[in-house]
Image 1 (tube, rainbow, N blue to C red):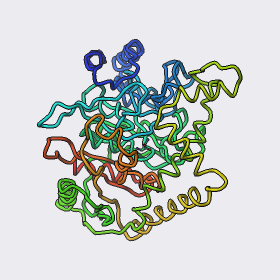
Image 2: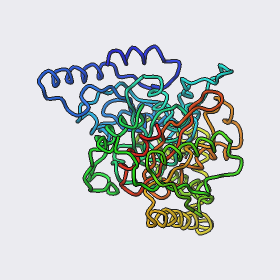
Image 3: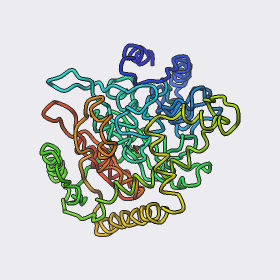
Image 4: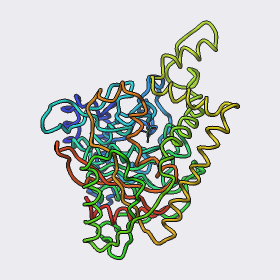
Length: 453
Ligand code: GLN
């Protein structure tokens, strides 16, 4: 714990931690020492972790990367972080993220971007770690924690993992409790771990997952010991390659990596088949209707009365308006406007209802493939390696949204997906592959992911 606290203090220029909690960390580490000495070590005893600052932590500031939550100190603990402490893990601090987890580069954080520890071979220009769990991915990659919590609404665990050469898994919707996690789009949000290896993510997920009556969408189903699946291999499994993911303009190196991944799985005993997910092309536009719609509703609670920031004004409506004007950043305001627009009476059927229908079709695409005996699906995790800070920030927002083209389908269908590091591009930057599984079959993802990593 002390070594990690020192590393964190020396790497402040990465801006990965928003809040450091050294006193709490050392107190937790002391308990861990006592438990170990007494022969009563719990499953994660003494392991120092970082927590994405979207998880409410008792009496520790929780900002969601937004100015509007400045000064908010929850009097409760998220179920997922609570489960980690129950099992003996140690909290090092809270990790930076895109504001309310909206973004793919960590540049929408009100507290400044996170800088990836990676550099291109031919340039010192700072790179993004991906987003929204950019602080989690950068902290794991830079050895500023052994593992981190993250959340994934449309790729926010898997894309930053791919950009930083780390492993990230978004479990099945309902596997982890969402209680105490600041809500973005409630029907898509899921928590999961980012860590250095498939085995580490398996160990962390075993602790994070599980039934919680405080989240009615959290499923009451036993949590397997996921670590047992690591090393099981892929002999006898059928892995699908969806032809619709061969998008226009896919860089040759991504295409090569994808092919290589399939070859590795084949060499390890899997059967590779081509599959079709015909509604893939509609996933991204439908996601960018459903997610902002739910966000606009979830973010209505930040009114200057209940949490954090308040900008005084002469009447209450003025106070709401000025608090929200000052407290939310550009991307969050854009999402609120898109969301309220697609939910408004005149446009509801044209946008929101249509997007929900597309969501059903996407889900059925996957069901049909799995019904045909496919055990998991292999795709690239992202359409490119990490880009430079500022490179895409002021471009058309849709360009940023395109980062999520391979990941959002998984959230729309509620399925588990893992991103594993699979190689380097010509500039020496990490590239990741994604495996998508059947509902609640995270074990196959750990088994197959370990063959690739
Ligand atoms: N990049 C996506 C978005 O901005 C996904 C975010 C997420 O998964 N939290 O909505």
